[in-house]
Image (tube, rainbow, N blue to C red; front, side, top):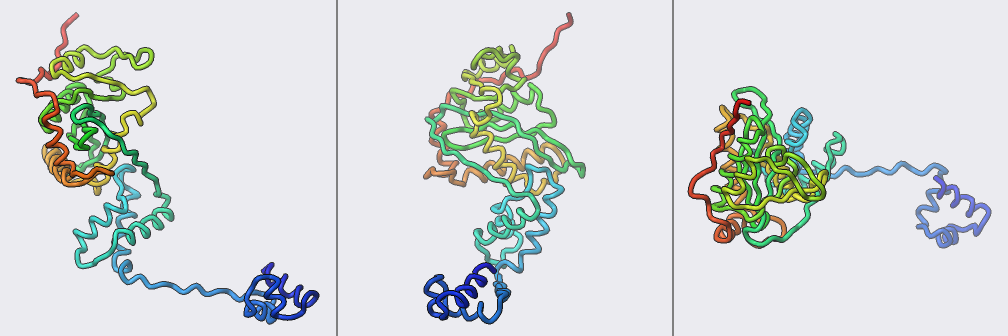
Length: 316
C-alpha cells in the first residue's frame, strides 16, 4: 500500500514518467502502471500446490495426531514414527520421510504439540561406563490402562540398552533390573552412573559424596562395579540413558501397547531392544549389535551366582 502511494506521488510530483519512477524506486514498470491505474494493490492469488503424494495419507496422519492429544505426553508419535507406520500400514503409498516431517511439523504447530529434541554426541571406552535410570510409560494390560516403571541400563560405548518393566520401582526391582541387564550385555560395566535414586542413596552429602544404602553397597560389592552419582538437578550428567528412555518410549511404546500381562509387555520390550541392535546411532560407523559384541570382551565377568534380591527386616 505505502509503495503504491509513493509511486503515485513520484509520478505526479516527481520525475513524471513511468520509466523514471521505475528506475528511481527500483521497481518494474509493470508495477508503476498498476499503481497509476488503481491506488489499491490487487489481491495476489497464491496458487494452491497439489500434493499427490501427501494427500492420500493426510487423514491417516491427522488421525494419529488427534489420538495423540489423549495419549501420555511422552508416548506421542514423532514424525519418524509416523513415517515408519506408513511404511508398514500403507505400503502401497511411497512417500518420503521429509515430506511427512514437514506436514507433521505444520500440524503439530497448529495443535500446540511441537517440541524440540537435542542430541549430544559423546565418546566412551569399551566397557567403561553404563548409565541407569527409571522412566515411566503406560501400557494397556488386560484392557486396563496401567502405569509401569521401566528400568533402563544403557552402555555409553556401544549404545546398547536393556529395558524391563515393573509395576513398582522399588529396591528389589532396581537390583533385579541390574542383574537382568548384566546378563543381557554378557558382563558388568566398570562404572555405573545414577541420579540420586532412593534405592541406592540414603543421604546426599557434600559434592558428589553419597551415603549409600546398605543393600546397594552389598550388591555393588557382589558384582564388582563402581558407582557414580549425578549432581542433584543435573540430569544431563547421565544424558545417555535419559535420551535412550525417550527414544525407546517414542519408537516402541507408541501407540500404547496392548498386552495380556506384564510378562508379555517385557517380551515386547526385549524384542524391541533386539531390533534396536540393528540401528546405527549418531556418528558411529557400526550397528549397536556389532558394537555390543566388541564391548563384551571388555566387560567385567558375570558373578558365579546372583545376589539375594529379597530384602529382610528384623523385629526391633
